[in-house]
Image 1: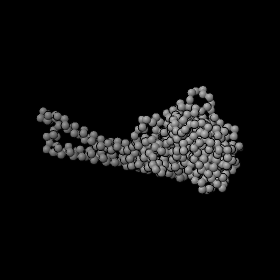
Image 2: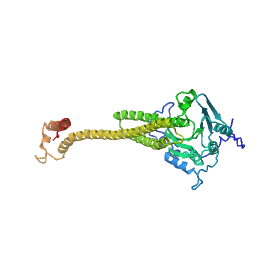
Image 3: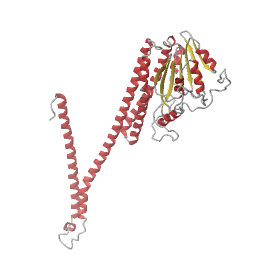
Image 4: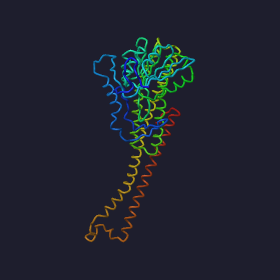
Amino acid sequence: MPWKDNTADIPSLFQGGSTFGIRRRQVFSDLFPTSQVAVQLQISMTDAPNDNPGWIADQLEDMQNRGEPGAVPGEVTAEKGDVPVDVQIIQYDADRLDEVQINNLQDVQRYAALPSMTWVNVTGIHDSWVVSEICRSFGVHGLVIEDIVNPHQRAKLETYDDVTYIVARMGELDGGFDSEQISIVLCDRAVLTFQERTGDCLEPIRRRLRTGRGRIRTRRHDYLVYAILDSIVDAYFPVLATIGDKLNQIEQDLTEDPSVDAVAMLQRIRTVLFMIRAVIAPHQEAVAHLIRDERLITEDTKVYLRDCADHIHQVLEACDTTRELAADLRDYCFAEMSFNQNETMKTLTVIASVFIPLSFIAGFYGMNFDPSASSWNMPETRWRYGYAFAIGLMGTVTAITLIGLKWMSASRRRNRRRRFRRTKTFLDFGTSPH
């Protein structure tokens, strides 16, 4: 059944086009290809698609779509979107649960008037007219509606009279790192969530509500908000675990074949981790403000919110640790390539050290002086054993050169061992190595 407003004949409101909510896709689409269950990172060194301007350009494009500078705050242009809007309402208490799909505004308004705990989930925010009407059914402020339909917000928390508005960003690896804005509105009567597109990390919460598992159906709306935030934050752990697995793979590959390509991969991973940290960090402040809320958040729920804040801290620490690991692997790759280059240079030096005196001998006896003109003009060239003498001389010089190089190498190893023993003695007994 198509969505209709019962007060006006406007068919198919969930069909239409709007520039709001452009999906942000990072330029690393070639870095993290999609898989069915967990994304396996198989980094490709090909360039990103030309039709993808990148994350920063998408952010700027989103900001350009906000409207003219100096527009009336909280005023949302009623545009119809191309992407269908899906509205799901879950109304529950300790004994029962009703889960329905909504097709008209009258049903939304009817559920908004009921005293039971209500979760309204709206997927697709590109039709700003529908979003505005749903929000007004629950008395949501116009500034909140403006932030909902402009999905470029950082994670934050704002309070408006008896409404608390929370912005969270759900991260995923789906052809590249992407973050989707999840708008959460906490009212006295309901919790409203607005998503840019289908697919989220909230299905475990829906299963808990359907099966009555845990305490979620016996708690107030604030606990549902905690559950949503905690699910969004916890979704970052598989993302970081996937990146960590890729780093382990790169580390194993570096021991066999360090290359410039690996350095580029590591730099891209560090950039992705920087983006993840930039997305998740503002959640700390938002959750901290929510913990201090005395109007809609109970003391019992604040205990769980503090656990959520701890999870955010763990994600940030994991980002920092993984970025440092990527940087260390990058430095190790540079060091390994430099070491291999030095080994090559050492081999070439040994070869040059052997052939330089041989080249001198060959050049010396290759001078074209006529022995018949003078007895001093290289008389050994007329000697019966002159050729054998030259070959023997070259062999002797080569042997002396190789023995000398080997002695120098052994001497350096002895000196290193001697320095190591002095250092070990210093560390064991606290005495000076000198």
